Length: 464
Image (tube, rainbow, N blue to C red; front, side, top):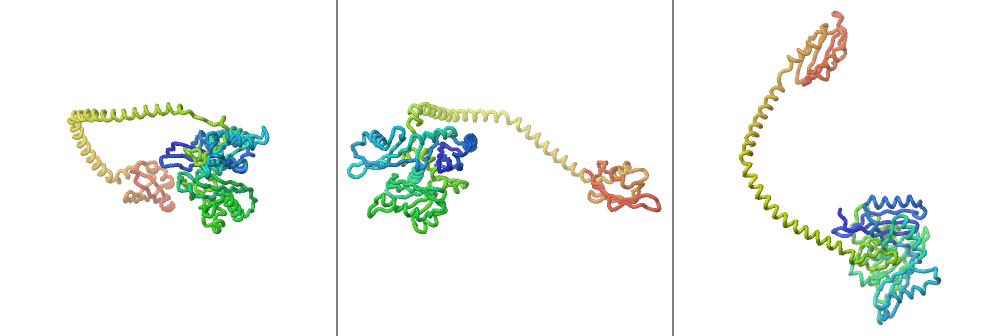
């Protein structure tokens, strides 16, 4: 399989690290590989680096397009309602808002924002995402030691939202609630008109009642959304490693509930279908790095660490591509002319070789006739009577005190009987004969009291 582009999603999920690769070919995206590394923080750094290197190297994955998903608990989300007049200076206004959330100089944030929609009354709705600098710097330094350098840093729920909304314009005017069910956490977030308008994460106990927790969180989300009398929630979509275990229970109460695997328009090979619920976040992160325009473009990576490629960087590639195209066109025309010249030369060669070819065909016919005669002679010789030669061989090989009283030959099988001073020594003597094989005794040897010699009965096969 030829893949044109590769994107890798790395999600830090509790104590585990989840890695998914999404590769594109001519037919679309393919979910190619997945791995889960438990307890990555407690692992030996060198062994962990070797395991990650082995995953990338064994699957032929590049590290040029890695998207990191940080835990939701480390993300601060704020929704800003701003006047439309600030649109020209929105970046600066958002910067002022971020500074108002920073209590001290040391407690600073990295941030990014996305414009949700223009509200009524010429207002702007903005989603502001923030993460503490100290936390993200420490995480990036830790990952860099493992050979992971992300080009985008966001949160897993945004990855799920992007892959859920991928190229689905029919969902833009509807409201969905997505639930990410981990082993010890639950995150519920809502999508309205293609935007992430609500997000809330709660920790769960080991024996938590998922149904009651999801229903309670869904009620809180619905009240926060303020959908109004005509507003409805289209579906509740479950993802995460615990989603399949509680789907039946939730679906019995909420019929409009489904698993995220039914909403992902990617090619998923058979060996990865069992991981799709578990890998939804990391796969969504990989899709975010693959999509040219993700629905929710949030990148918390510090500006100084982002890899920017100038438009001029594409000029050599474009020139090279045009040169290749010109060469291909020239090669195509050259091939046509060359083919015509070759055909003309081949016609001349054929005419000049007609007489020698006719002579060779005559020799071949004579050769085939001789081969037939040789085969016929070989068949005749194959079935000639070998008895005389066998008797001559027995006369030469058998000791002088040995007498053959009976000789019988049929279909290549020979039977001998007679007397000898040492009948047991006859078998190795006869095995040395090129005319005989599989020489053995028929029954036991016994001594003839009258002659004092051993009576023998032998059998053998014609050796050729």
